[in-house]
Length: 403
View 1 (tube, one colour):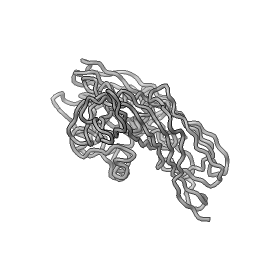
View 2 (view 1 turned 135 degrees about the vertical axis):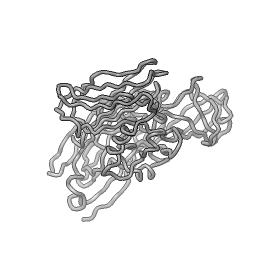
View 3 (view 1 turned 90 degrees about the horizontal axis):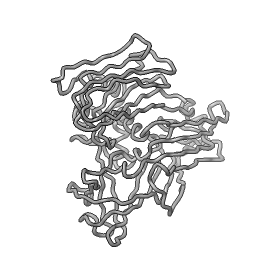
């Protein structure tokens, strides 16, 4: 028996007005009666057709079928803040297994996209640019081209109806879909929590959206008054056939790259952070970065700590980086990022120049630095120049593939 690939398309709902806010859970189910359907969730995705209304006081929205782009704070997956997945599948022993994976983290979609920026091969991002993710920039201070495109479809007094589409890869929002695998799924129940569209979109100091006619470079102001989901569709990558013969056993088991996230608000004038983080896992990596108070992930706040200490409570081990205040940037931080993201890996997006100019991430290989238990208290102490505005310190801990 051979094995063949197909894309399975399933419409979850259509011609509806599902609000984009935390009260609206996006629920769907994947099921099959076949014993030989192997789902490649890593390469599968959601398609959301979204509609809304924008004021027509701006010159960019004066004609039907006119296209324009609106600035956003996140990659499309950043629309999802939390997820739950309940799997029923056949494992390599032929047993029917049920497993619930709960992504009980803050801004899980944004966090997963950061992880993929740092650890996924550049070729994958080149393939997905403009389709499953907004294209990453090769220069400038913005990490990615933070614009989603809309089309004007009808005009009424004082406002214009608009239409757009978002494609969200499962790997960034569904637990258990974040590594290449081919799972013999009998049923998968998914529940996604969305953030408010007003947090997803970028608003300037005038509380207006920044828009670009024909997705060009000349910007103006307008206000999107509402957005809702009109249609939700699944696009599943499935292999049908003799998986025992054609797919390695390790790739037919459900695995999950577990993460734990924490978002810490730092106030204007703050110049240090010193606290403990309780962690119910043994982490492999730590990723830390700073965003503005709106969680804008397209353009990070460039903070260079002059002191950076990590320790595990109850142990004698600790690591410190202590640098002269006069130094604008220290290459020791880059050495760690380069080691974690590029050593023994395919070429990633992050280079020294991109790290210095826009990808201001700090990455530590914690499993090589400390001994951990199943439950740990991480001591984190940073010192930096006084902050000129409210800032969010984003912390992500990553665990190895496991269920």
